Image (cartoon, rainbow, N blue to C red; front, side, top):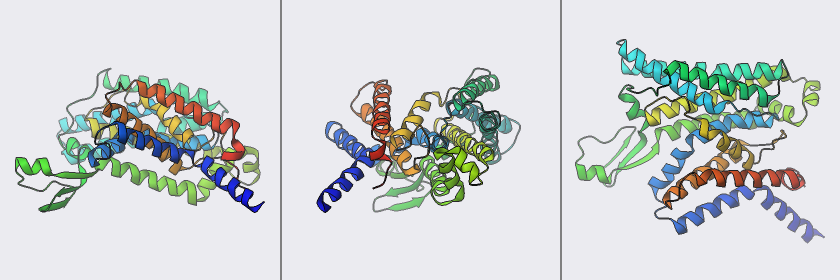
Length: 356
């Protein structure tokens, strides 16, 4: 009897952690079929490819745990990228220094990026508009506003320092000769530049710092507890003293903040601002949250699971590129993974979500 209980406990643990086994299997498959998949450069490419999805999915995790969904984040990325780039270009043209122009553009994008979340939260919490409808409406508003701001043309000619920030790394290592922080060693020959090893992209570092802060908030603070409580049962949360309306507004603003931060990271990486910058990543973000263990019915989910889900998509994308397979196949694969995750959540809730 004890042996059966132990075996069942092991089985349940494996089911709950299916995403980790899926991730490991994916890595093994591409390492065998591809070339140099485990190289430092390729691993960092996976992190860079996952940046937008990681940020969008982190904000989406909070919303989905409450039982909602935010469909506006893809075009909030575009709106923020356009605002960020436009402010940088205009301020530099007005004679401001590159440092002030860049910092002003980033701050403006992050502040403006909170507004869609505020509106979404008010519509959902105060006016009881279904999250799908409210955020889908904001989807169109954000996209149209971005196109108006940039006059339907991507914003280019950003300050030159943007490239050094977005394409920079935390560490640089020249084996046997130099190890520097944030900037490349000076006076390197062409051969030494070829041997220079760049470690941890700046964009990745900023992304994981932001994710780490909000992972702590979700897991270790009252705000996180209230988020789970609302997703578990809104009525019970209200009876327990949770201000559900105010909390939902904050949750949607968190989602919008991460979308605007993704827009800033887009500008730093691609040195441009585009209205449809994050539109293709909406599905990926939702998939990352769901395969990370969050239920679309609310009440469950973790940032760690979401991060693994986003990395699965990033590893899949780079793996397809490595195998010279057209990347549009990524959408098919992501769709299949989403269906698999929902089936697991739908038909095996007692295995995935219940403790023994």
